[in-house]
Picture 1: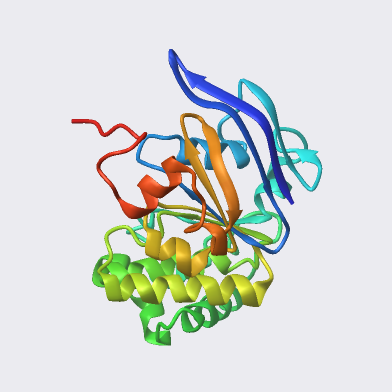
Picture 2 (picture 1 turned 90 degrees about the vertical axis):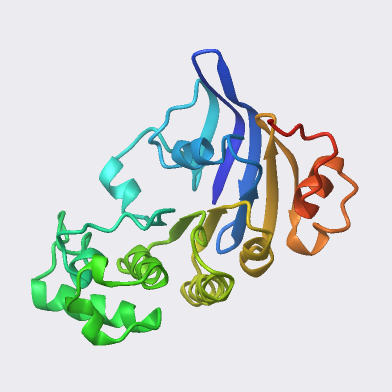
Length: 248
């Protein structure tokens, strides 16, 4: 469904992506792993067309992501942001229904609110949560609201940016399970960027490791532990020594 071919991107003298090749099949969950500053977020933004590659191609269903109707293109995506990115001044249900209340397919408020409450229920939040403000919720609840917003418009493709950052191990497990269940239920294509190996094993069908501006290894999550790639082995086991240099 999504294909990247020889994608390059630099900012000044910093060559972030140096020939990325990656295929994400339809209705599968791809998790991109790699250390901080390796270009995972730039890769995600490039797929969304928010960053234009210097060279190479990125296609969605065979169409270049930098061409065509942008609104129609972005309407196919849902996104769970790393920091939640909820609007403080809007009630929870208004956050969840944000897209539903805008654009060409704008829904009446009562209908949008009904859908928002349904999605809140799907992520384990009670209907009364709908009329609270984000500041009144815990970090885990805010993350669930962000997930409800990501699925509110029934997108074909969902991106998850470090979905468990800032959460305790138990809540991280809850979020991972919810993501896996929802992606499977919806038949959505998912792309997650994370360095949390627990999330990788819970969410992924396939894994790709980004290092040095290129995909070092990609394959089914079931083969992750068996690969003899030294970069992958160092990363997944958190070893201080190996080919990946630590910044001191």
